[in-house]
Length: 113
Length: 118
Image (cartoon, rainbow over all chains, first blue to last red):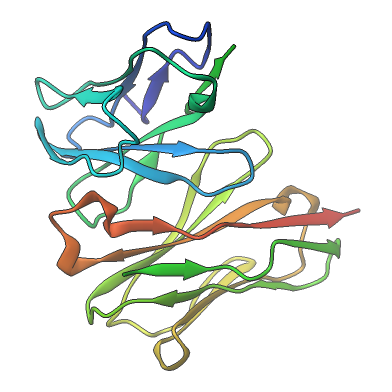
């Protein structure tokens, strides 16, 4: 595709439900990153993949958050037992390789009621 | 630890004025990369520029210019003859080469909200 795509664009869920956020990176991009952006702040790193390998997940807030990229392309960020504090914009980015420019998707705005 | 500071939280200018957005970074590495991204009201993050630590040449792209000074650890962004469409939040970001195995090598500053008034 022409750019990074994410789905859904908006997600409203009730506290305690699980949600899965999808990211489809730019074709050929090896590295894929997940960020969370609170209103009025810069993106905050969550985790990243090189091909299918999750290289660093130190930014994940707790064990309710997980991510996978089984075939080295599409990635899913899953939040289990959502809480209101999980409400934020979740952004995905991809790059040709590490340290290369990251191109961001439109984000998924998550609202936990 | 790496850190990016954008001291200006909000700036307002009148159209056609020049405006400079400041970015100061901290790193212990000699090889690193600096970025600027624009986030317009629509919300997407748009890449503007990438600079490596070995290239201190200033860059100009249309009305945009960037001043990289290693001596002061700054990578400032100037918009000349600002326009209403320049209104956005601008983020400066830093990536360290030695942290290449860790995703946290990409750190964003808090952003500067620029409002260009007609």
